[in-house]
Length: 493
Image (tube, rainbow, N blue to C red; front, side, top):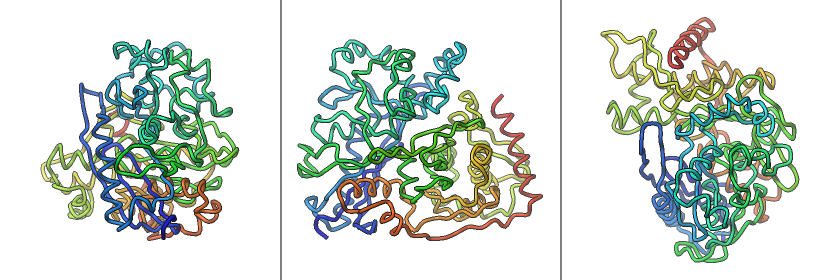
């Protein structure tokens, strides 16, 4: 086994998961460590760099222990990350401000101003993205304008921008390398999709200096080796990077045009592979880079719902209806139907296809006999119904969807997966390991270090767990969708 193990670091919004896997993508060890969220003001979400790093160290150490492996047995490291979260740090990897999380809405007014100037069409044509505070560009601009000395330091080369992958590689390499991969770069509002290069006109619009941005590299190559970090030996190749949703697409072995996946994490993220063709969306979706391996750039259509698993956390932490997330399925099964109760999970605004950052969550249709079981079931239905809206938009741009691969923590909820299949009216296929985000990072690292000979070799080790098939009467499906659409209109007022 020596020399055949891969360490995958999945740095997410609420915690970091580390997997130690072998050359069959079999998990030998796994650990997750959560960290606290920072909410400076309403609509603002931040992370402390030290908390993220502590979660990385703790999860990696625990995963290695669980695998009964020595750190010296790790042949490669793959990194996947929460994508649009924006970092500003110095050349010693020290943060100059808390990292601004993708959920943060503080730049909504700036996005509205740019839209009013008529810039959105050009931005979308170049980047595949819409002008929304979700993305990194306006976050970078905010940091430059609000962190004392930030603009002068970036111009002098003493301060660097990046997404979480950039900062992790910088830190893991002892400050030697300032890079990102094409998938993460495509989420910044600053990258031209066709050339896969930072675009000067976009940099001018957002007033971000190119010298502060990382070098854009492929998703599978050796970027650097570990150096001086303590919990891992020096010299391990850091060999794969992809944003979390693209990594999940890769981990689901969706390598060809027409294959789609939905990852249920803090939010819900759907990607449809479009091959090497850039497909503009006319239905409110995003066009993004799926992967860059060697000279081959593949693209995808994407739709994001900002809140999915976070709604279950809200039931647990905000309302106290459950004590742990795994309890929601049993509570939701305590009722057979919610009647006209509808939940719109717009707790951080509405993502695709609406792009309404000002929208707020809505729970409607309650009566005197409504109880926590109804609310729990309505929350699961809301998570599934918002995805239907996104996936239906995808079919307008790219044709009918025949099957959906599902992954992420909430995909282990059988009731939710059955709801998703019922409301969408297509089969949903769940893999044996739902941590496909981390597996995708491991596969990318394995490709560049020769552990996997090709993408076909990765596909051969992908394993199915269960397929959920539609069982809902068409009339009832349409009733549910119509009720949802009315509720969404009220949430977006």
